[in-house]
Image 1 (cartoon, rainbow, N blue to C red):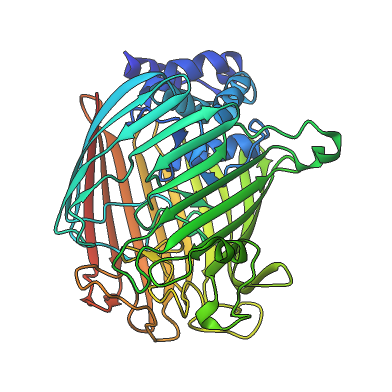
Image 2 (spheres, rainbow, N blue to C red):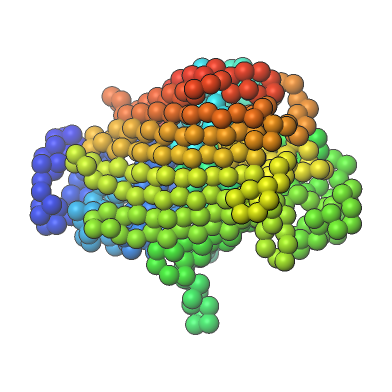
Length: 510
């Protein structure tokens, strides 16, 4: 019945959409059968949800930032309701997708899911729509959501794990709401910044770090007149602990991000990451205070430097173009601090835009990333970005960088397209030209021989093509197929990677 309704509606003209915008949005929602979970937030990796949210925000139907993932559902539902009958020819598919996801995710009760995935090769270059990284992984999850509490338990077993962790609980969490605050604990993916291919400060490239966190539920603007210029804002802070097998075992990780929307269309993000403590390092209150106020950068000598810090500033401005949307964005990240601002800078900049061709939606982006410190505007400083003289395993977790997948001393230029078909299927194509480890040296200490460290071992330039296709299957399950190829093999410290990788992921919710 849902397919029949979609076929009938798909023949409608723009005039018809104008007449029945809200009703159509409700009717065609069942056509989107991508499997979701009963979580109180939208996790990073769902490119169609990102397309929908960003288009609504750029066309002034969603007055909140969309550069901090996960995104809480209460921030979305109110705006979706208000947008149903507005601008229907441009946003009907975006609203429909979010409505369906809201019905399957943001509701009280329990849901269970089984998932199976595998890949022929664990790839180095990743983007927002991450792909399977293990030879084989089987997981079963149970999620429950009530009025003020939500929990998820997701045990998984991995064959020939790239990090020697056969049993995992990634994706498990416990969270509660108290007024407009969310307090949680668990291991959930995050993505901070406007980039589609990379984030300079925090991404879903590595496994999620177990942590506790505090964030706002709704991006409500300040009611105080003298703070009204801030607009809708959000703040999140988390504290976790990295793995034991590293140069400084059990290093603590603290992350903070503040997002503002002072004018409609303009998203401003301020982020900070602190690596502190760990075995053999000071973990008293004084050292933590020194780290929090930025009293480091080796003012007292390397041995007493309390932390390794990264800070970033990102901006994105989105606007409507006819019945479509476009945005331009930039992110700057510094490894140190000078004059209260990040220093030893890396840069990311890009543009994204939407189209509606052949009765379906497309999301495009072009993006440039340079992670060699001060290379773009200054004198290049190799061996700085994502590395540290005390925390010598660097800004990595179980072998993968926690920010840009290309690592430090690298550049990447990417052109990407996501095609969203009217029956719920999705096609993705990203072509990149990357220059890895331009300095040619590996400075990171890699103490665990059973972990595959995704670090380019030599100076390498190459083209990377990534293809993905996701489709619903009979019975309501979802299948995702991904292939990645490079024009030459990537050299890692452990050896050469295959030039081609093929992966598949299947999941079913009941």
